[in-house]
Image (tube, rainbow, N blue to C red):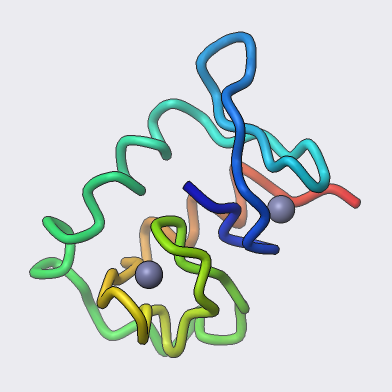
Length: 93
Ligand SMILES: [Zn+2]
Ligand SMILES: [Zn+2]
């Protein structure tokens, strides 16, 4: 998987989190599960206008997302998931 902030490959951290290999930012096991199931969340996707200012990369392939949708693999980030990424797993550095 790839860091949603900078698209660097994510590597396993000691306690089961994923770590951004570029900055060391940690992503919880919970978020990993969400990242792995983006396809199943697609149906729940709401209009995400409020969070479109966030520039994120697809966790599944690293492509920069357009309006929270990956133009490459079609994965979608829901508003809730984007909020979790930004508020609970801030990117350091
Ligand atoms: Zn990163
Ligand atoms: Zn993708």
